[in-house]
Length: 278
Image (tube, rainbow, N blue to C red; front, side, top):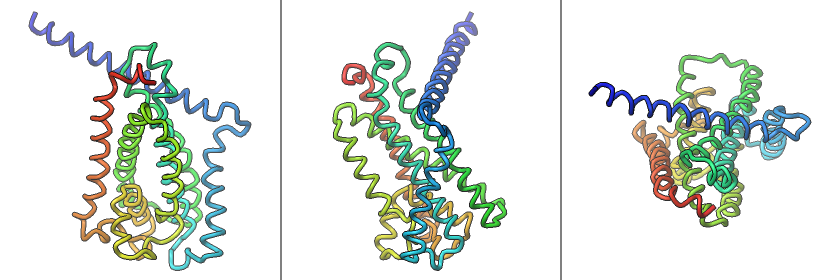
């Protein structure tokens, strides 16, 4: 009897988690398909967009302003920054309005509200996986051979996803009450592309500005991934070297994890009132 009373709740919990994961997968898949449903070229746009950005930035900053001088394999350096920045913008941009856009589902179907922003982040991850094909093209063109060190890219990407999700949850919670968040965040992401070393080497910045930039987990992940693929040359300086050793890397990683924790706690506190506010 004791065993039965113990197993049943565990089984119910597993079924509930399994159901929520199915809902998450279905919503994310539907959103991803709808994103390109009315487009003649469909998923091809997921590759063409970063390549289009690359073409413009390469001509302007690589050829005209000569920012690529001194950076080994500048095209790969540039496309890596573009794809990572695009994921950051897509992820947060899809996540923060997700509760308002999914208000009908939120009111009519009983499931944890967290599933909605999670599905938005998962949709961005799907697009990101396709975008990585553009990076792969440049890796092949650069005649680079992956090494064991490239496995470090996986935890770096997980760090970026955690940061994007946490930031998205914070923005989603605020957006339910303050719709000006949309305009503020749009302006912020437009400024971020110039404040991040996407198309220029971070070493052109003053030392204090480099350290400030590395506090941003996006910049830290971007530079560390470049260092893994291209080597730790001056233009690909890592967060560890800029922030005084490997202990310095703990600062942006800590910021990423703290952002996720704050996002989850804030979302959990406000979630009981989401249905009536959206």
